[in-house]
Image 1 (cartoon, helix red, strand yellow):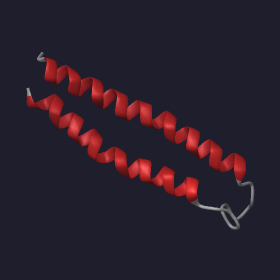
Image 2 (cartoon, helix red, strand yellow):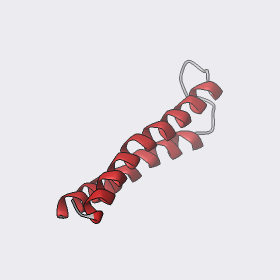
Image 3 (tube, helix red, strand yellow):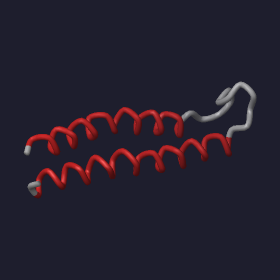
Length: 72
């Protein structure tokens, strides 16, 4: 197994599992701060937008890391 393949495997693991903890923390902040029944009704949606952005940002990183892992 080459160094590049190992790096791709490690990067896939870090991106997949590390981002779960980041997003869980952001979701926790959102629900701690906004208790309204219509959630986000009168609140600033900044944290929600950041959380959604992280989900979208993860996909290309995961695919790139998987491709890097499978190249060699």
